[in-house]
Image (cartoon, rainbow, N blue to C red; front, side, top):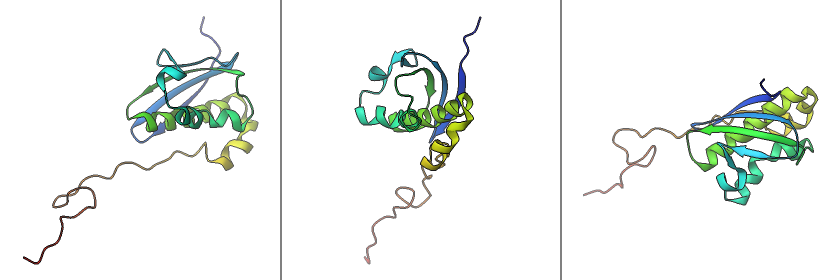
Length: 130
């Protein structure tokens, strides 16, 4: 029998995170690894768990995450977005705390493509008269 999880999908840059939460002891598992093992940088871990502290549920939810694509920052942002959505599925009353903090809004910024004739997306070659 499947466990009763509340689910949320989060996205940022090219990362996608599927977050499943249930009331528990605060166990966090990301792609089968512990949070400290997957995100070794403390600030990144704090950023990912901000929605939990906004609704004052730190250490009271078991979280299981499957995240793919992108880098560390994008994956942490996708985790945060998915966690906020899962918390909303758990209790719709959390919207009052999560929405003003911006945790339910998908960050739509992506890397701009490189254009022909330029060195990067906007960086043009140095100008020289001769």
